[in-house]
Structure formats: C-alpha cells, structure tokens
Image (tube, rainbow, N blue to C red):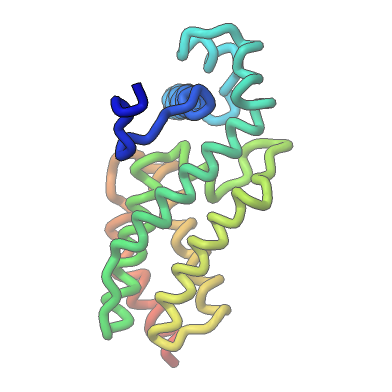
Length: 201
C-alpha cells in the first residue's frame, strides 16, 4: 500500500546499486595494482597480474579500465590527492625557516614512505605514460599549495623551482641509497638553513 512507503528513506534504483558495485570493483582493482607495484615495481605491472589479484579474467578489467595506462592514471590521481590532503595538514607559522624545515621533512617523508608512489608522481619512469589533463590538475593543485605556503614568506617562483629540486634530490638519494634509513633525512635541516640563507640575501 502507498501508506507503507516511508518518504524519508531514499529509493535505491538498480542504476545506483550498479554504480556503487562498479566503483567498489574499481577501488579493489586499484588497491591490487598498488600492492603489485609496491612489491615488484611500477614497470612490472600487468593486467593479467591485476586480474589474478582480484579474481577475474584479464579481459574483464576492460569494463573498468580500458588500458594499463588508465590504471596508472587512476593511481596517479590517488597519489596526488593523498599528497594534497597530507600537505594541507602542515601548519604555517610566521617563521620562514621553521616552515621550510617542516615542509621539507613532510615532503621527504611522503616520498620515502611509498617509493612506488614517489616514482609515479615525481619521476618519469613509465615510457608512454602521461597523466590525463584532469589527473594532472591534481599535481598542479599540489604545486599551488606549496606556492601559497612560500608566498606567505615572500618567496617567488624561482625559489619554488629550487626548493622542489632540492626536495626531490633528497628524497631520491634517500630512497636509492639508504632505503629505510635516514642518511639524507638527517641533512634536511641543514639543507633548509643553507637554502634560507641563500634566498634571503
């Protein structure tokens, strides 16, 4: 009877249920892809391995991602969003050197915590892969976040370029030459002091 219908309860249509299942499966596929690249490297990812991880046939993956690069692209978005959400939590103070040190420690920690994610976001390690414009907009958002943090202390675009070069250099050295250690992490405070002294002249 119509009187039995509760108007305050939304009606779930088959379309919404299908969409939710589709998104859940996409999320499962991406989680499997991350697990594989963390274990075997970005370039070793195959659709067959991803399909096996989620218990489906490789051709079925095309219902969710039309290509391996599409999986990389979705992973790229995830990584960029994680960076933005992580970096937004770092407080800004009225002291430039304090903020430089805190920001660099956070950046290098983000990179070294997940080398596969670092390679995907900040290095060109996958021949033939370019993030789509929509996906790359998340990288731009992350760079704009850093740009705004620097502008608080009056730093310009040249300072941004130099700072990102130092950051990726420290992260790369740490990941490549002392994984799990702190040999280059220990240099962050001194590097930021030298950087601050240089740009403040």
